[in-house]
Image 1 (cartoon, chains in turn brown, red):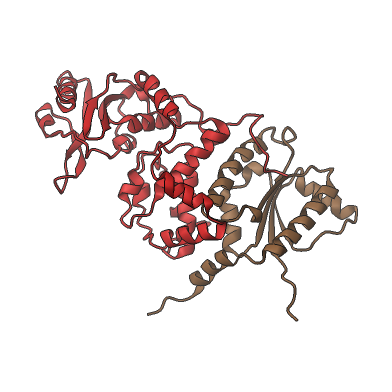
Image 2 (image 1 turned 60 degrees about the horizontal axis):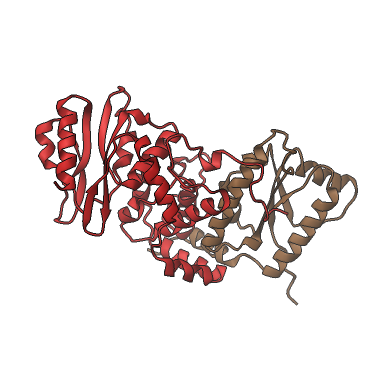
Amino acid sequence: MSEEFEPKIIAFVCTYCTYAGADLAGTSRLKYAPNVRMIRLPCTGRISPMFILKALQKGADGILVSGCHPGDCHFTHGNFHARRRWTVFRSLLNFVGIPQERVWFSWISAAEGNKFAETINKMTEEIRKLGPFKQYQQLIEEMETPAKV
Amino acid sequence: MGALEILKDRAKQLLTAGEVKMVIGYGRGSTADRRRAIFISDEAQADKLVLDKSCEDNLAGYLVREGLLQDGKKVAIFLSPAGIRSVNVLAAEDQLNPDQVVILGFEIKGDQVSALDGHHVNGFIELVGQIKKQGLSKDREELIAKLEKMTPPERFEFWRAQFSKCLKCYACRQGCPMCYCRRCIVDRNQPQWINTSPHSMGNFEWNIVRAFHLAGRCVGCGNCERACPVGIPLMLLNQQMAAEVLSAFDHFAGMNSTQEPVLASFKREDPDTFIL
């Protein structure tokens, strides 16, 4: 019997809201899928689209970008800038054929430990259904195969 | 008088009067239907200028070449409406002072070339407004519609095949008037964001990032696609980005010389329906 596919999910989160929300989920002893690797950044405004591409390049099956709700940003408007950037970048990813179901965005505040756990669980399930991101992972394989002489 | 004569006369007058130090225009290229940029600082040379329907390249990128405008003197330049919009974007991004640019405007419609009135970018605001009203380029609508109907894996395969042709020559970047960064992100190697070898992964990343960096800045002049030696339809990506910023933020690149860059500004009521 084959083992169930365990998706690799990379979460880019801001330290003031979503990371604190994840902390709350932990201290509240909420159980959530262990498939997520969190990367903490000062603000969603700090998250460059390059991070998403890098995560895909290293074999991620799903990506979550999460930060403070609009109006709650520690730096007052970092997430507003991020929101514009993601609107555009998401449409670009879709246009080149990177499914939108693999790149998620959410606002999770420091008080929303529940929402964090739920989002991670839901995302893990949905991406498990999608399966590994084979198309992109073939590019990795091609990159790592030595050229034929 | 044809457009060339009108603009050539204007160029000569500007040079004779010492109002501009240089005229950037089109001269003969390597074949009968090619044109290349020429740089004239002596009015006697002005007869080398050519203007016809082959003058498709956007020359605005030459304005931001290092040192050209640093002495505060003026430069005259042949520009199509797309070129005029590029000057607006460059001015809005503080790359040049629009008062130093004397525009010799022209418009190509089919085989006809006509001269445009005005010499300062602010004189063309109405014209750019009309272009916005006309809507985005309808080029290759069929192909775009076909792409939109595809499933993501099919689209991925389409672009993988296209990008696999890429040689990483960066001609698209060199030809683009908006790609003025002294150190482009592909040239950075600590950390190395984009693989520089021309395998599919690096090609994918490069072309995505190039399109993203032009989002809301591309004026659709088509220099990148004409420069591409392997014929990747780069303008499809650029048009998609332009359509996105127009529909989501009502942003049309190069409206005027003080327009806020779309990704460096925001509105509280921007759409965020995709965020959970």
